[in-house]
Length: 186
Image (cartoon, rainbow, N blue to C red; front, side):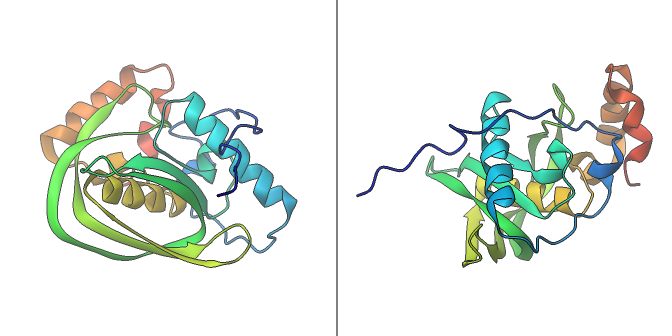
């Protein structure tokens, strides 16, 4: 078995894009250049995710409007899932819908019960162009759906409804970065 460097160990922590920043609320562009810049972006995204104690991070959360996300996320059986996807598409989301607590590094310090399917399948490619298919259940399925939402210009708060949404919007407006609440989809 080869020794592989820990993802993010040579990356730079980038500034986090917060709710209201236009790049966070626009669909991301497909990646067409699979060179060293993409590898550097992925390395920086891992470093940024780990520095923020996250389990997933989309490129637009660091201000880059490309279809890329990284993850280091357990499922409900505490199995660790570690990797990245380029040009991912959510191809299946099914099973039971659970309303579970969900937060976001771009809405720091907040979370809300958010409905998500218990199973998700995402297809894309790796940084070298190799096709990849990632399937997740439980918390990892939530992560996969959350990150693919980001690449479509959405955030978890877009899925929160009713009194939970009203409460979340009030909490967002109280935050120093909360001026972007109007960017949420209705």
